[in-house]
Length: 214
Image 1 (tube, rainbow, N blue to C red):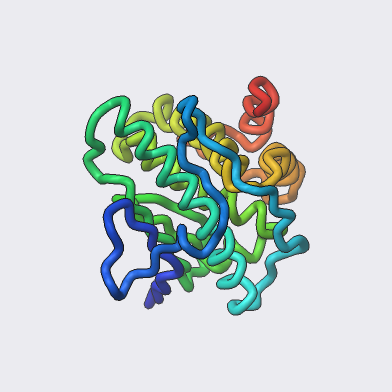
Image 2 (image 1 turned 135 degrees about the vertical axis):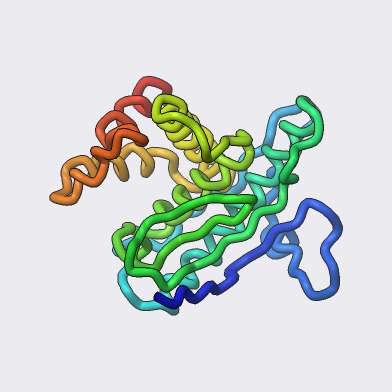
């Protein structure tokens, strides 16, 4: 099967070259640390609501909008972590790709976030798109590894859920969308897909988020 990759957005920590857009200039929001060391919240955004659907143009708009806000927050949080803990092997540059792949899902590797159009079709609104991007970016910020045992993988997923929720909050999206997202998946007819022993179930993920409200 041929897989088509469409680069939606790239945010670089280093100075942008002439052929790379610095998306931080496209919004007036400031998510950089303030004088107290805390990271300022971006202005709230309602986002586009409703099912994302199969329309590729709509999907691309939602991914672009969400990426601009989320990856700016991710870059700031990542750099703060680097300042405290030292250089990060993969740096703080993230790319988002949309893939024409019927297998569905989302993934992260080497600072590349990949979202399948089939998966986007199942999401409800821009805030959920933002969370998926944030969850995958969180794996990079936390330097999660791929070749780990099931117990570690489940722990990493829960950590990425928590940080992903924090990132969308910093980006201005409502954080309660994350818990509702996993609750909906747990109740859906496809909830059996969460039975993979390498991942916590959707119900477990919602429960963990309820234990530590933002």
